[in-house]
Image 1 (tube, rainbow, N blue to C red):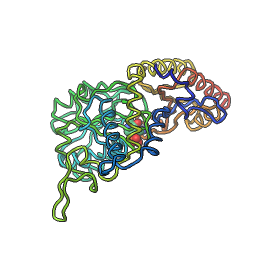
Image 2 (image 1 turned 180 degrees about the horizontal axis):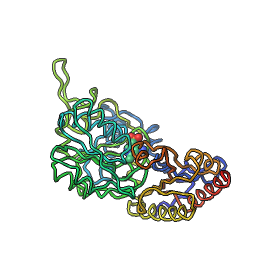
Image 3 (image 1 turned 120 degrees about the vertical axis):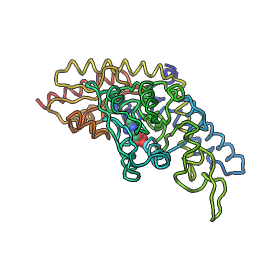
Image 4 (image 1 turned 135 degrees about the horizontal axis):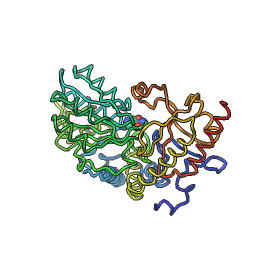
Length: 403
Ligand code: PMP
């Protein structure tokens, strides 16, 4: 990995405790720590390079506009797309709401059906329920297999010509299970449905090419990709994006405004009302560059090896129940017999280990697993075996405390 060119400490300031020791951060699936290159790019954008975009007649603003659009190009390139196909949103959540409230309202009507899965994040459930309230569409829920994957054999049985949309997570934020996207796309196509893929957990973990996958919509957030919060992306096929009506109205998304009638800018600007998150976009672009530079194949191999080691170590402790498949991407969810995940999380924190404990914004999946919450360790580029060793030490201490 060319990350070795900087020391770990210099490159990931967020991973260093105040006393200089290493923080065992195992919550990258919630949000990733930032490499120094992203922080530096954002500091420059906020300081010496700062100006607005798209409107300025002065050189600084013209330069910032170029940098902003270059960031869009870098983020689009990360998923094999063109910049004209990529809308900046506040995050994946906003991107899904955008699709539901524009494409969904324009194209779906009472009697149409949407297929979701049991393992979806609330961000890929609630926007569709809001659309259901508005239009009368019906929602169906594809079950998950015993080992925690979206059950595509069940999806095939469930899908009918009434289904206009399939919306699945590419990688589960709880179980780390990876969707067989080509198969899912084929099933959607067989019934003439569009397919949206929630790429929040996949873009930073596996190489994605939206055109090769032949998806219709792909959404993700910058902050899980080693970039900042407050920005994310919606990619859609150009012909779909071009036909989508605007959502939020305001500056920057228009062509011409009169009180009688307003005409709109072409996509992607049509969906970006108001002054955008300029500094965050620069950070997003820097993060896309960084991840591309390291290489998603390298990242994937690194995280796969860590998942295998973590699962093996946890399996060896007979008080641990593991969830999800062995080949999960970067994420391991588990439960400890007789210990609530929150208690485990608190004791681990005392040991300098940060995990996530809770329902992970996937309550329907918790209901299916029959638990109120799970403990989740998730890895990133910067994770290593010392993090797993610290996790195991913390679990052993928890065992002693709880007898
Ligand atoms: N989908 C998945 C699979 C996620 O992991 C997350 C974040 N936990 C989201 C959607 C929502 O992302 P955001 O909060 O950044 O909009």
